[in-house]
Image (cartoon, one colour):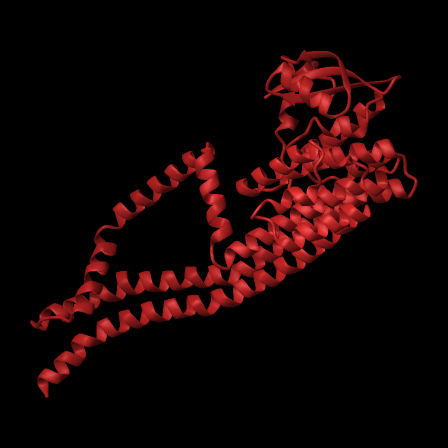
Length: 407
């Protein structure tokens, strides 16, 4: 990615000066046009020191999602309290604990002093402020309700973070149980079994089949662990390089797998629908046109199949069709969602329909996660019980066999 300085027209009189990240001059022009500005001058910055509004080190900075959410909410509260934006940014920069973020806020402050908008200043840091974030800020600036837009962004981000936290919390116990159970099994096979192996071999009798299988597994783990480590490292590297440039076919396959997977597929679908509905509702309530809002919402979806269906809907809406009727042709989206969107369009309350959908699917995602967790725990206990039971029985069978022979 390169850094481009530009001048652009915003409206009949206002001139914007800012810096933008792009891989080429044409991409920079496209990005500036998407922001609703008319490019007048664009120049690539080769010397970092010549960039007035940004630098390449800060462009690469990444922050935790919660930090950005806290900043957004605090700035909204300051603006709502009547604090000017420059003073608000200065206050937040002074209290920022992250040194790079402090520098970024000071840079944004300087850019606004030079007559640029907040959205233009934020767009120079795409790793921190996403295109959706910038679009919502710009909508707030255009409507004169920046504080309201910032509060909406903060609430939106908080809801998304809460969903992710709920899923992570729900899966923590089953994952911990799996790790402890696997560790216990490996300990028994690599530490306990080799000591019993000597006793079994001195018995001089034919060992039962389960015991032979257990001994083979134990020998493989104790003697072939180096190959297991090599295989694990090799597999990790292979997955890393494949994931760094995933093919279209592979993305679609994974997306299909996620949607069709028993129990989990329902969670994935509802989480995606909740995020999409909430994003589209937020954009529409901020005054963004439905086509532009849909275009901004589609990248929020991670599932390739759902993305493709929404892209088809976008093209159909461009040609004059309704949103609900286009979604009805897809087998991916639930009838409840399609019907509610259609009713919302007909009544002119699409934002309310999307808000209701977002709330419904967020609640259902929470419930689905709870159900999934409640199912996972007994299944994992059962699997671990079967494996540990097999190990214990395999170790005791030769003893029982010897006891029968003695009697």
